[in-house]
Length: 279
Image (cartoon, rainbow, N blue to C red; front, side, top):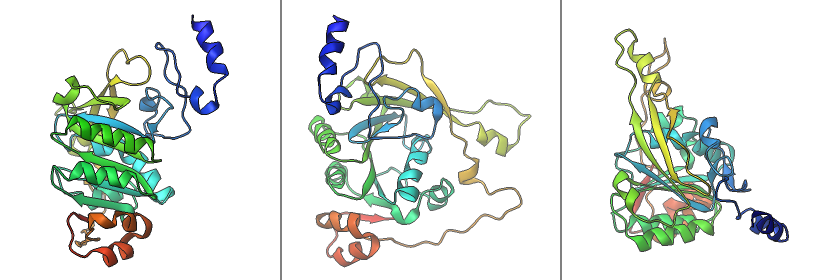
């Protein structure tokens, strides 16, 4: 049977061949992946990176346990190298510009969208339909099944990374997302012999990939996510004081203008904002 399937797949167009895999093997590499920046994690991901044009679910104990540090290397590549926008939609915390800058993200390409629980999935869906978007991250404590399906459809038609970040309790719920993983914080060891800086360098996240195009891993992966570079100044240097300010306020009817022109286009289109965004 396996030989027959392989023979049949060999006669399919290349774009369809990449969508076929055996159940005991990872899916073929896709052209649309972005390396995660964590070699061990890439080895567990189909295509050796975060899939573009597909919805990825990160299930977290609570917002801020390390999900941003997990995806930061990919966001750095998208903003600083590819010059594409990254949208943070309804995060449960205010983005910390100093940490984003320390991770290497281009701040003028990062947009923080403040939206209500009912509006946030719509904002993410519309963002995925625009050009110039590198990644969309959406935080939702509760989300309807039909909204998740629409997000997956919108992601399939885009070239962007799409992340839905929601509670671990959603693990038992069905989802159209091809890639799902549960992330749990792994605190550093309680060792009185290490100083605060060393302790923060040992911070990590346990990544349990329970759904992917291929067999699930035998056990969760521990990804080291040191905090030092983002939250502590380098030895001998004073910490920089961030300059407060609003980047732009966006009417959701003009999201395309934001993606195309950044600050100037958004400022020109910001009449009567329904959803606000800033750095």
